Amino acid sequence: MTLDLATFAKEKGVKYFMVSYTDLFGAQRAKLVPAQAIADMQEDGAGFAGFASWLDMTPAHADMLAVPDPSSVIQLPWKPEVAWVASNLVMEDELVDQGPRNVLNRLIGEAEAQGMHVKTGVEAEFFLLTPEGTEISDPYDTAEKPCYDQQAVMRRYDVIAEICDYMLELGWGPYQNDHEDANGQFEMNWEFDDALRTADKHSFFKFMVKSVAEKHGYRATFMPKPIAGLTGNGCHVHISVWDKDGKTNVFADKDMELGLSARGRTFLGGIMKHASALAAITNPTVNSYKRINAPRTMSGATWAPNTVTWTGNNRTHMVRVPGPGRFELRLPDGAANPYLLQSIIIAAGLSGVKTQADPGKRHDIDMYAEGHTITDAPRLPLNLLDALRQYEADPELMSAMGEGFSRAYLKLKHQEWNAFTSHFSQWERENTLDI
Image (tube, rainbow, N blue to C red):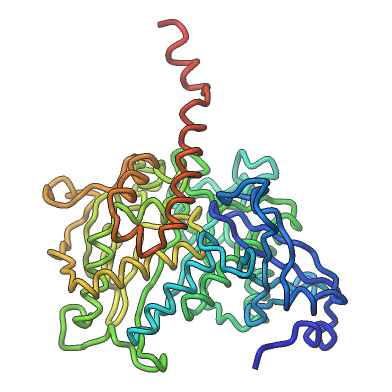
């Protein structure tokens, strides 16, 4: 039975709903709707001008309606009179094909039609910076090896504990929080879930972390490489596929290499086959490639891949298989759109299963120390333009993601790249003014 949001408001004391959607660039958009009006909004949607956010639309387009999905509703733990609800985009009674949540819903349906129920978990890393965003918030967080720093995580206890308390309250099953490998960087983990629920939680998590950080006088960022010389913000994804009832992990087979079943291998094969094109979605900004192709960081490792390789329990590769029945994709970064991230994984995986793709040779070397010895593995794109070109050169993946979505995404991302290249930078002034 569909949850009635008006009844939810009365029972929970909710005064306002944030009817929210995520645009192509991962920006979250919302209207604040009083509870008295939510019944109409649940049926008809809240009206938006699509052109006003990062969607490929013009001012002449009809109203775009964000129709709330009641199953996604979350009462804000830090402001219980407000509830957030994810929405599906509709225009003139048709689903908007470039809407990221719509793309994901369609691909989930395609997977389920093949008896595959995709479950994922994300590891969303973030920095706590000063309000200006120019430096880390903790002046004492200066260790050369800051990962798991006990003192540093306790100096930000108020922020981290508050966020974790809220996840406990929401029933997300958070199970660990830590100071990450960069000064000022943190990671918080919660239990894996169905791909759509993980995407909704991921979207809300970013909103929650930023809100709580602002409340405490800090600025949280998921930007892939916000501080030069420090490890960047990854967003690793753990992937498994279950049967149609969601009870049996079909990726698990104790008799196969690393406990990964034949179907799991072909799903992984799809990820490997399309990896370079994946980067256009998993690493969607100019800044993303300062993480992937970063030089040695202060801590001694970037923890980011730059080559298309897979391995067992080894963190120096693009994909690792840490245990039976699942694998971890280490390519994505903090800028990834929560809905498109899940979509591209499913699209590539389904392609692999359909074509019985072979993931290729497994490598167990330390890629940071010995990666130069592997000469037959593709390098990941060096910049956003390369990634977009790789995506355009992969018609199978573009079709799987949807032609309407792909056209819109590529158009706007090429515009972004052109804006970047036309920008006159301080580096240019410093290095070429007197040539």
